[in-house]
Length: 183
Image 1 (spheres, rainbow, N blue to C red):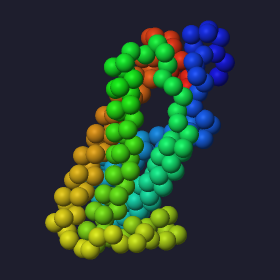
Image 2 (image 1 turned 90 degrees about the horizontal axis):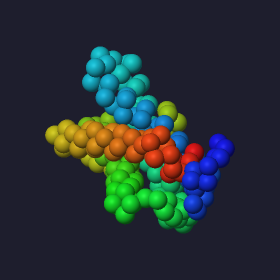
Image 3 (image 1 turned 180 degrees about the vertical axis):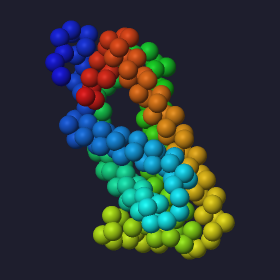
C-alpha cells in the first residue's frame, strides 16, 4: 500500500509484520467461526453436522492457540503509539474494544471445549488428536456453558462490527492513517 499524503502516513509506523499476520489470520478464523456457529442449529443431525461440529471445535482450538501467541506477542512487542489525531475518548474506546475482544477470544474456545466435554463429546483437532478432557460429563452444565459460549459469540460479532466500522470511518471519512497501521 502506497501512502501519498503525509496525513495518511502512520505517525509512529505500523504494527509489526507478525502482529499484522496474527490479526488478519485470527480475524478470518473468528468470522468463519461466527458464521458456522450461527448455522449449526439449522443443519440436520447426522454425519455432516458432526463433521461441521468437529471442524468448529478444531478451529476454536486454533484460535485459542493463536490468541495465546498474539497476546504474548503484544505484551512483548507493544503496539505503536496511538495516532496523534485521535481524541482521548477514541483511544479509550479502541483499547476497551481490543482488550475485550482479546478476552472473549481467549475465553470462548475454552468454554466451547468445556461445554463439549460436559456434553460428553470429545474435542478433536482436525482428526489428528483430541484435546484432553477438562470437564466431566454433565449435560445440564453443558447447556449453560454453551449458552454463555453462544452469547459471547454475539458479543464478539458486535464488537467486530464496531471495530470494522471504526476502521472504515477512519479510512473513508477522516482519511487518516489508523487503518494503514494494520494493513
